[in-house]
Length: 188
Ligand SMILES: NC(=O)c1ccc[n+]([C@@H]2O[C@H](COP(=O)([O-])OP(=O)(O)OC[C@H]3O[C@@H](n4cnc5c(N)ncnc54)[C@H](O)[C@@H]3O)[C@@H](O)[C@H]2O)c1
Image (cartoon, rainbow, N blue to C red; front, side):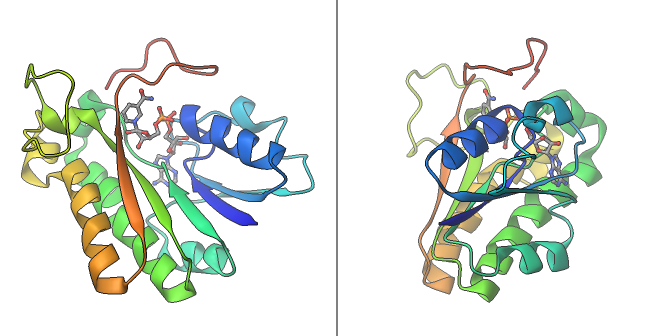
């Protein structure tokens, strides 16, 4: 099957793309390399079932072209750093909020059966409750996350899409994922 991985040159995306390839799937990686690294995918892009598109999730036409015939989209592209989202709120909104809507719209337009979008446990801010659970109210700390509720919005849009577009989509809220190629200095 053919899968799209946005943010596929990043930490989680490159590991996911590798796993999908190992499982004999065709993978299209869409990444603008803004925080992702070419070295994360250099072994992958020579693979005959892997296509790398250097581009942005803010480009709806690119997403629509790439999504035709896909069995699913894993949407991991994001400005994931909380400090950067504070420094660049407009860009963060464009990528994390509008970009997510673009992905969902491209999926709808192309009849892609399912979308899995990355959210983050950072939407729960400083709430000391542990473990976190999905019924908790989002209390994001950074202004763009608070004002635009950007990551909460990922989850909300995802569930709205399921309802409005009649397609399954889900958002995963992860926290401090460990693994190969993780950048030690990654700040969330
Ligand atoms: N790693 C963790 O512990 C963790 C925890 C919580 C949530 N998450 C979420 O999981 C997802 C992946 O995280 P990660 O750790 O792999 O981050 P990452 O920064 O390594 O990967 C994100 C990728 O998205 C790409 N990207 C950014 N803007 C883009 C754009 N406009 N168009 C296309 N690509 C773009 C970057 O170049 C990068 O390759 C993110 O949404 C992140 O918020 C990760």
